[in-house]
Length: 447
Image 1 (tube, rainbow, N blue to C red):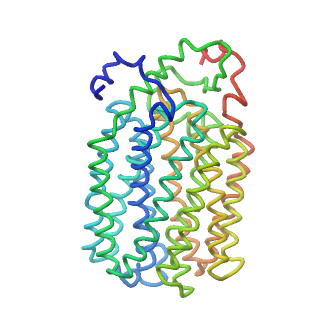
Image 2: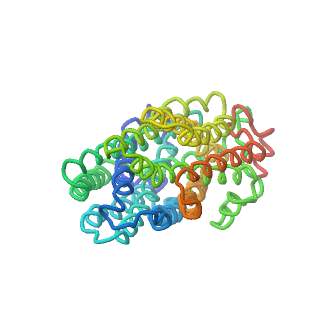
Image 3: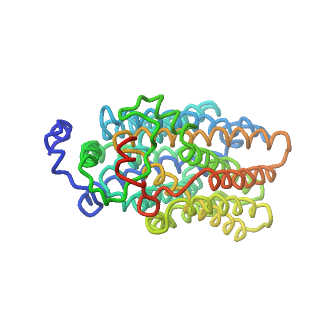
């Protein structure tokens, strides 16, 4: 069945959901998100560590150093918002393809960059790629899998993506040592983007018809099915503004999830922009920095193989809350000791906390967002989540600037995670329908 035929709606009833039933497309989407992780990872080790030596950032210019992550978060956040809504109109595959086209100039800009401003602009393009492409890999997998597989689905998605980030950080560290920072990133980046473009155009199918099929089945759902606690204060065909306000403040569950997503990105901003510089100032070489930062990414990615599936059994709420607190503790540990093994262990603990919360915050949104506007809901959640890159990086820059010490930034992030986790615990609730179903079919239909 072609994409155009699927969009006609004539074959909607023949589409089935499930990982095994759609294994080929599921694997293709896993490859896509791993490539998206590669694209992000090439900027995570070499660029911050060599900001002074290679790209002219003066030592101690913390706000300038964080500017590229601020730009990345702003652009990625907005594009997450746009991607979700746009994908419900033109399909998931076209949005994914647009994301990879946006990434094509990035390796060339890094190679030819005369100063840090070019790196900031390249990161803006990378933010477009991440906002469009990563969003679509997640949304597409949710389209073709069942409700009882959402935790596993998002866990596998984020596993593939963040293992990609970690691998790219290590590979580019070695490539920069062997070939030079610019040439190493150019070769690696071009290989990633061209591979992704070819795979998208030739093998990826659009999954929007599966979302339409799921929406169609809700009208005939059995009375004894576990029904999600969908928001009641929203229309059947909501406008963009309706969904945005619901996700941001009108539904306290969605708002609690969104604020947690925003604050947890403080950890990632710290690991991206401050941690490599902190380690470089401690005298570590690029390869060692790559492995330590990689411990965070590998633990984060690898643990999601079971933390996502875990939430399909025990629910989303407590893994999310505990993940916030554990990750914050791992961040605080970095400055409570010293040495390669200590820093690697601290990074791994922070990564494990992220693995508990990262897939399950998204799964919680997917649990209580109807399929007819689930793409928009996920996009808006991801807007707030990735805006955390900007807010976190700006906060890190200001804290480092006024304190004059990188160590203070770790405490800033640790306290933020503690407070945000408490907010999620207080205002959130269990969203998994089997554990906390809606009370009756009539109340669901009244929504």
